Length: 346
Image (cartoon, rainbow, N blue to C red; front, side, top):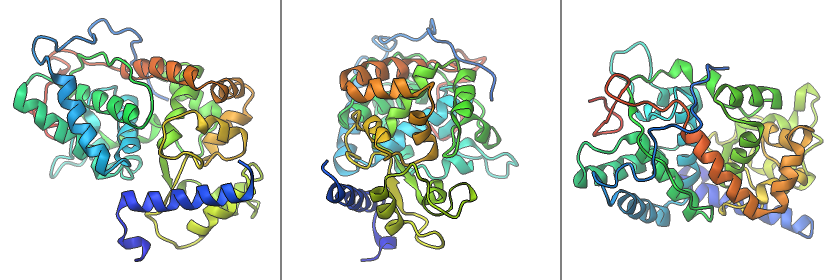
């Protein structure tokens, strides 16, 4: 069977195993700040009276999906991240473009086109189940935050409390996406400026990057590191030769299957853990922005601390996710809505 006939989940599993085996065989082993750090309207028990079984409903839907498609986990984490970084955590990334509109919605921006449809589907599934029990009560923005937490926990990560009370945004513009999300070749200066614009710290930057523990990237995002790093016609010297050789097998310099992906974490790609940081120390970072976290003296001490202590990573990640979830929160009919179907306005 050719790669083009494989499902997304099967394809990433095969490629991840190839990379792990190859490495193992070679060695022993700029936007306006709209964030509110402690938003006074968000509480863990926000729906305790209006939808008391909300978390159990969402957990049931996600756990069933995770069993058949674990690759949906990193896709959903990315979806939540991109939602919060563009106009705040308001579910605007879930809206579909309006037919005939000159302005595409966020989900149709180039930076979001690589997010698998399964990530959107699981939000709709969870929302549908919640609507059947608590119609017109829970926002899509809160559903997305809860689904993300469930996936992180199911993948082996921490189970942290999710504060709720967000309303759904009324606008969604693809033109706002590029300047408000990180890119594969972002420098630390770029990342610090972007995160600071959202009210996030350097610690949040390094800790939230740990979500790459279970993420994947298409070849185009790192192929320049394999063949022509910074115009040198040579590979990036800061990539382990074993990883380089393995990635070249899947990602040719020209042509190749555009759907091929490789894991950010080459050693434990399906486990949410702190191996991502350990890999950065060993020149096993996939993207230029990943490796930069270890090479830059401002972020390197944080990488080293998280590489040593999984519990610290989990604790810090839980806090950072709360910070992320507080960006640009909307409240009330003047600023938002509670959508019954996440990809459509009321």
